[in-house]
Length: 319
Image (tube, rainbow, N blue to C red; front, side):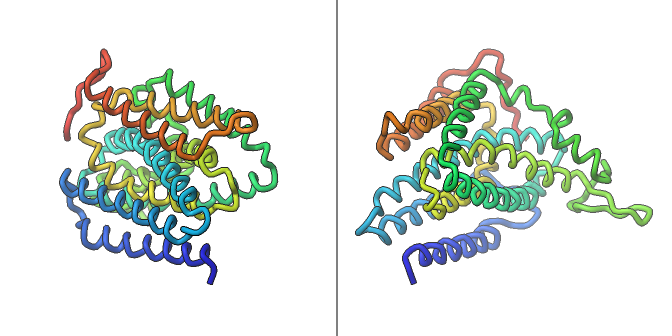
């Protein structure tokens, strides 16, 4: 058995066992998740990701283990930071559909499983494209620069309106829906016809919107791990970051208004990695440089948000 196959087996086993542990022991059905429980679950997923990083390093210690481990943790932190920004959109969606807190966990789990499914498809397609047409990396780079500038200048939380979002219009047009109280159900049968409830609409909307998120995150991860042969590092960093979304949601939902400048920190990261991809032929930066920029920008924007509140920003309202 070669090392790559072994790492795939270990990765799959870790994910399955971790999900069983998280859902079976750390989560309780139809119960609101407390800040303390969310913190424990978040630490659980972060520590698990770091342990897997150590395994990658150790397993290939005689080769590129250190470089692979740094690439993995850089991609993981990048996806994790992008996920934090996405969580604020999730909070708006849950508020718009008036989802009860006891149903958050189930809805998020289904949404995250859909996100993993889409990420696998996007990564598979991306690695195939990069392997055959390396010049596509320049398109990825230009797209990330454009996205970074747009993200830096806009206030996306204020502008995001679920009712006018393309995903909401798609569901209203192609799905038979009902505004009746779901009582934890995803489908209600009335007059021998099945209707999708608000809970089902939230799940579908999270899945559809994650397609848009993946369009940003997949090119970003290729900037850190440009070698299409290292699909395992790309898959594992993405999936570990997405799996931690549920607990991170509960941890951050009460503090959504406290990170006014996180968006700008993420925008600077996207600008940096986009320019890095465009200039890679002339300017070669070591792997750790990306990791350092990601850590400084995200940490700096969070700290800055803590001390400086944006003028006109709404006060946080806890549920």
